[in-house]
Length: 97
Image 1 (cartoon, rainbow, N blue to C red):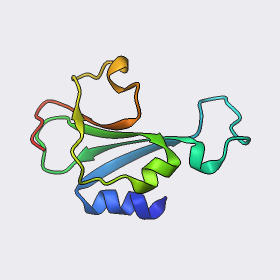
Image 2 (cartoon, rainbow, N blue to C red):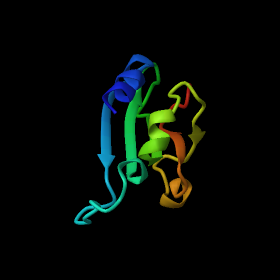
Image 3 (cartoon, rainbow, N blue to C red):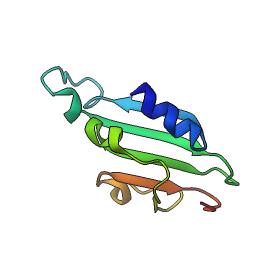
């Protein structure tokens, strides 16, 4: 996972926040590592305003994630129903990427 986080940083991101696991207070020790949920939120470099990018999915998908791919634009602030599905999202004041 560290290699993937470094790749994201090298591709123009800072202030990465990662949540790994099923949920707060949930014992996910019976869930295979590659099936566990992961959410990675970061600030893209070169965007004005308060932009954020988010990868949401399973760990196996995160390892295959290409940070150079085009994210889906969602509203600012994001509405939960916009990112219910696994995917790659961006929101913020100025979407310049």
